[in-house]
Image (cartoon, rainbow, N blue to C red):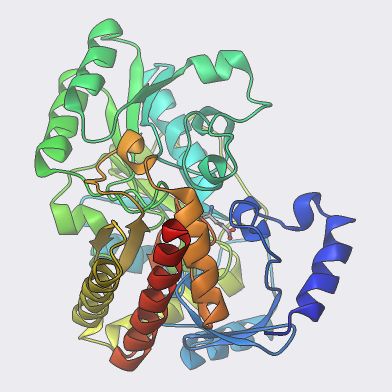
Length: 434
Ligand code: HOZ
């Protein structure tokens, strides 16, 4: 596979941009090799600067639930752009998208649009602190909620991939207010509440973790979190940036029946344009300025192009009544196929999946929390990743990220992924045997 154009671009980029990328995992640092510079995407296919085509399993890390460059979304963005790209003033599209988001989350009565998932979680925390008058928060090891100071403690995703789960540059006083519990372990949460019964503003969590690879919650954990937060007067914040509108129309909140006080979204609601949002009950959200005293603002918040792309995405999703069945069927097919492929070549793996989010951990498992996720063999993953890439399958370049499927993936695409994955497992097995 010729990669000279990507190599030349990466060489130029590294002289201009730290690590040559604008988001760490893209640099291929943990898997080695040269990142592919993408020139275009359509449906399930990515094309790089050398003209190589890849079957995509990343889906821009979640937004592309319909596949890339969906005609309806592209047309909506083009039409919106003709009328201006930013006004810094309210628009009807914001109202329309807010109606769409809230209609799917009956527990939420107000929503505020921002520009990224990071802004959404950061703002939700501020609301929780403003509403409760408390400073401390609880997060879970290996959960990732964007790169705001308070949340870059024991973080997953790129922070975990690059080995800096607790970032430099976060003031010690800020990090001190972030308490870290263990995912799927209620006792670890209870202990933190018992030590500070009146000081914890909120528990923030990924209802399905996508950022230490896919890790699912137990029902007991979910209902226990609700019970503990209620008992201690703290808010429960569900970070649905990855899972919102992906696991079900009402995301993980609907899928698992979670009663959250605040929900954060991103990715799908912007149809691939930069967007985030946070919402909740009116009494909680009315703490936000200009109604309340919690300040949060943004020149590009509610941007007309992002709103248009989000609305068009919702319309196209509504026109696909079998959307969630198809996503589940493709996910199940891929999960079963990869498990069988690994078994055929004697490679011990744990495949965690919910709907169209999936991770292959190179470990016996089970993988239920950060400690067990960390047992994945990153050398084996690396080999497997490159095995896929050489065979034209673009998988997340990290052992600790989720792959995302789309409605555009056909059974035949998944078969192709399984074939490539199985051959790549053979490569892993031969390397182990040497
Ligand atoms: N850390 C992001 C996914 N969890 C990756 C973002 C990107 O590199 O685009």
